[in-house]
Amino acid sequence: MRIGIAPDALALVRTSIWPHERARLLGQVAATGADPVSLGAALGMLLGEHDVAGLPATVVLSDDLVRLWQVTPPQGAARLADLEAAAALRYQALFGGGLGGWSISADWDAARPFLAAALPLALLEQLTAAASSQRFRLVEIVPQFVAAMNQHRRVRRAGAWFGVVHGGVLSVAAFDGDLLAAVRTAPIPAGADRDWLEGHVAREALRVGLSRPERLQICGPAPTGWASSAGRLKFACTLFEDETDPLWPDCARLALTGRAP
Image (cartoon, rainbow, N blue to C red; front, side, top):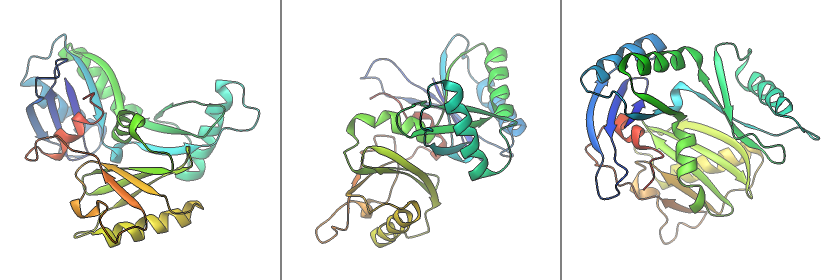
């Protein structure tokens, strides 16, 4: 099973190892607040309506609930401690303060820039407590952006940037060739068309000191008008096919992010 947790809602989706069986939305519940205690209470309500004992569970967290950033490994880094120190320093520069109350996970790499994520310890404790009380197996807790990046890693083209649309927000990983340069997030204004997208990408490229990408690859419910068309050649834009039921709420789409096809 898969659980999607966003600041305003949670969803429980039943999946199968058999490719011919479609995912089933078992339930959803609104959250009274985005703090860990409120989300933990909402999760208890959601799971209390179903028998989940013994089931493996993947939890996908909305990027609103986590912090993501790019880390450049220091020259001569030879130990995990060196990479952890670099990630902590970069975190402090971007977000201010220390890492108290946060748990870091990353695709640690001493040779190239990597993506790091910080998850709230209080929320992780709520998830662990739910697994214990409901007796399900907590297999993975992953931010949505990381899940989407891993899901589409093999189809990302050289020179392309990668984006995720969820809940009216566009998150973009900017790449310098095949090296991760930055992760940027911005709200999508109402009626955002291809012109808005081109302007947004141009501004983000300037901010991170890169040239405009040759292609932007996006997953999630992006406006169809963003896709490449004749006369729109400032950069190509590919929208990955979204097979989720269009009537499903955002929190259910969130839960399925990263699911193997």
